[in-house]
Length: 531
Image 1 (cartoon, rainbow, N blue to C red):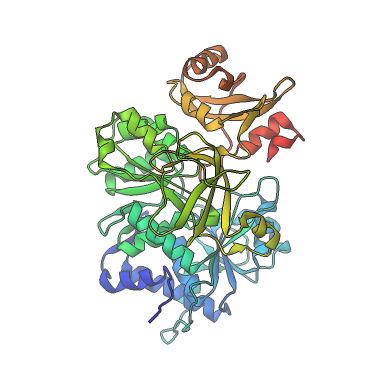
Image 2: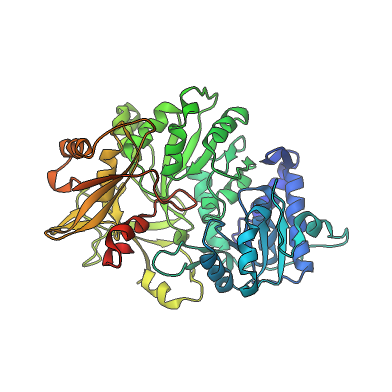
């Protein structure tokens, strides 16, 4: 007997075995698994009654609330596709995505409805459903969420849909830089197997209390929306990234696990409250989205006692394809050496398939020497079905059965892969390849530096040279020359930035991922290095 792989089955299991356990905490609200399951089913029945059919698309524009979790488990059992939207995008990008996605219904949070009000006349949305937000109202003509699901009758039932594990479950959009966002088609199978990786490698258990720091719209919370339910653990919702609130939740709710980009880690360890907090439980934190500096990992483990767990992936791979496996032998290393290992992206996960680094010229796997540079490629169980309505971009990304990530890396003798840079972020100065992340890793060790980004800037002699753009800790003072001298003392001279700018903040995505293309625009203008 073959039963389709779908993460939706985990809700059925959780409601069956843990009906009275708290499934979701959202502020003052608490829902058991029985209650959560019933609410998700009500949403599904209400959408069915509203005319949503199998393979039709429903967009959701929600922060990390119980409504967002209900949307994942309410839309998809119909065989319909959930389209999670980044509510921080521009009106132009949101308009493009909603139209391109072919969504018929939009579930939107009242706080973020204003931007939809401004573009609603150009959207194909047939019905708006509004979820409440304290202190926010909207003029958008829509139905209140609670009224919508409350209209379901006692005799209403979810339709029986024969799901195919290879049919689309979610349509997740990449952030556009120099081109329009691309719609990544993820199936029930890719979501299931990525969720299994999350469950296993981030060590999610029944007693876990997981804080949704990472936006659920971002690749389905990296799979956390599924994995936490699979274990029967507790979801704790977080509307906005607020470091003091997060640290309070660590203490008051007994948080045991969370995920976030290195920027979020940086915000937590540098919050004043972090110096005084005393945590009763050891918290595991998965980090990805950008290569984390070893110095940042060391600080997180020392300041908050976080057990940092480094994972790597892309929206196109659901997203996990590598994780930094921890071995007992590493426990004997000093803290700095441990942090350096944890900064590596690592090895294949158990359920994702094959990942390796290949030479860009001949496509052969690079030597496992930690030196030969190549591009990370992957194939297997979590790779997207393709870009929605874009066969040309799909063919560019998936070649000869492999997905090309665009990330440059080396493979160490133990098989651990370590990213050196994005192809577009690699600095080629006078014919030498210079890794921007390597320079950033050195600079993060400087006590005055809170955040740093290194980019290429044009240079008449060398073509392009590295430039450091730095955010200092509050009250810190340091000169450009002092930064350059510090870098010169800690790395090869040809890699040292040629200049330094001090800024108040760096541009980031909603998940805290640095947007270097915006910085390059400032220095290259209409030049080639903006992508």
